[in-house]
Length: 104
Image 1 (tube, rainbow, N blue to C red):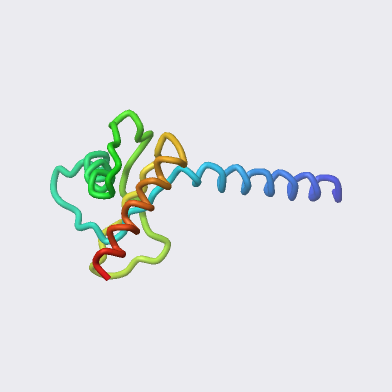
Image 2: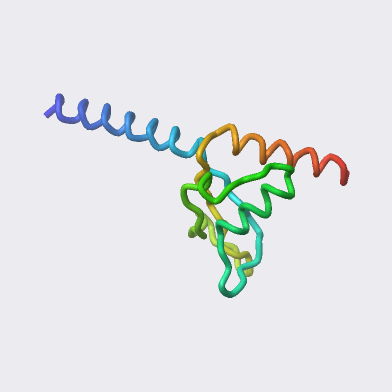
């Protein structure tokens, strides 16, 4: 019984690490109003362009709205996009941060 618990604990740890690695390629967009017939892929591409990054549709593995951990009344579901590489994610975030610094 102890071996089974140890093995289960080990597998749980490996699974958690694998999930964390998979999230390294994700970018989350919070607060973007939902519109009819929206395309999350197109929205992510527009955000990337605003950040100064030219993103092609094939560089986005998936993009969709997800249920938030804590639902806030009136706040739209966030968009989570999985990008082809962490470098793309980092470039987009850096471009958006640079844009924010211009405003403040």
